[in-house]
Amino acid sequence: MRYRRLEAEDYAREYLKGIWAATLTPFDADLRIDEAGFRRNIDHWIGDLGIDGLFVGGKQNEFFSMSLPERKHLFDLAVEGTHGRAHAILSCSDQNMDTVIELARYAQSIGGEFIIVHAPVLHFLSAQDQTLYEYYRHLSEQVDIGIALWSHADSGYLMSPELCARIAELPNIVAIKYSVPREMYIKLTSMVGDKLIVSTASEEEWLDNIVELNWPVYLCSTPPYLMQTAVDRRMREYTDLARRGEVERARAVRDSLAPVRQALRRTRPPEKPQAHQKYWQELLGQVGGPVRRPLLDLTEAEKAATRAAFEACGLRRGAAASAA
Image (cartoon, rainbow, N blue to C red; front, side, top):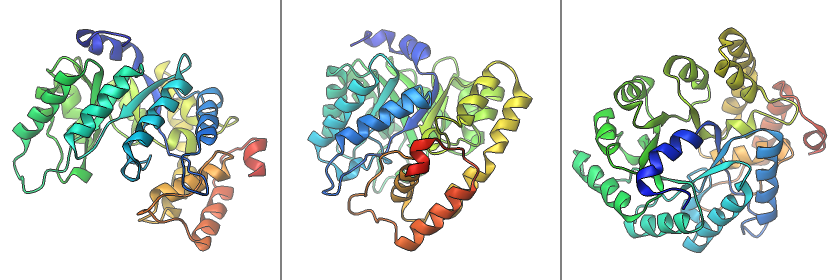
């Protein structure tokens, strides 16, 4: 461990900053993890795009289709690939509490910096606050590593700001990925902004959250590497401009990405987010590959529509992307 349990909050304040991206898992033609491809993507994301941290093993990564050894191996690749160059938060989310704890302990044992755990689906419960408090309290007592909460409508409910503030009093709860309406995360930030690092996955709201809420981290989704290239780092640019107080310039750069956002949104089939994003990666010269069952791959018609939108969106590409 790089810090003690009671030092987790201070460590997070120092290092959980900047632009973090949620990774996709490249699989080869036999649906095995493409280790070389994942390493290549990590090198590109950190070296060429200036991404500060990676969110590894989440829903974008198709963790639900992986065995426990595969999930641990993905952690190994991420810790190795980011060491000394960037940071990583490792997703231990699972419906089985023993699996969550086993992954959390493994992340800690290999030198992971942070873990994140999605609020579980709680069947038959309509009042779940005490259950959730005990869930995160028990987890926090099993490990010393800093823990980020994650609340999303996928659980069937949203954790209230009041509940999040209560859980934040636990010593190694350091952050939350709060995928909720903006008024909810504004409220939570005002309640515990000095105790809990609050963030959300919306890239469109990121600039306003830097300026209005003084948020330190974008945590996180795929835009940092789907909307940037080695020669067109506009998300990095507007983030840095906002940090320097050049807000109007930052807004102009942010707004210039609207055609890229629209192209991604317009061509993404509702049941195929991972497959669509992996294909967009391939158009950028990154390693994408197929998805695992039960997810669906793109049809040739969907690929053609995505390719046409990609070519017209105005994202500048280098030689690797042009050749893809």
